[in-house]
Image 1: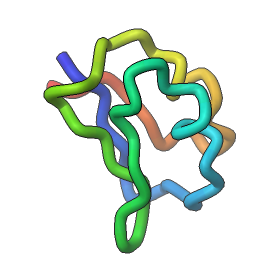
Image 2: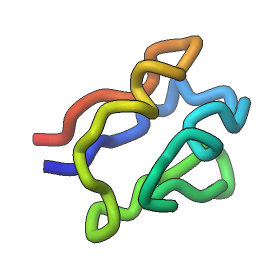
Image 3: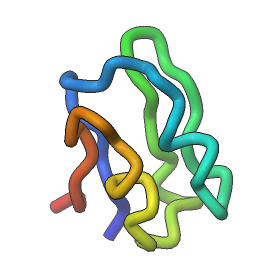
Image 4: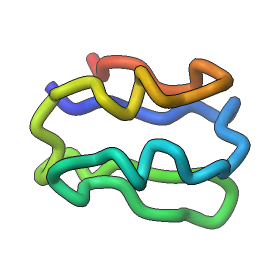
Length: 57
């Protein structure tokens, strides 16, 4: 299951730089995760300073 980024995202970019599958890109108001590319590793959640990233449902 892919990770998701909530509205708490501050667009710092930490998550994008650590994603091994290039699944994260900058959206209009927050970063977004492409579920098809996400390998469910959790590196992005570990790097998020505001805890805006969590496993999807």
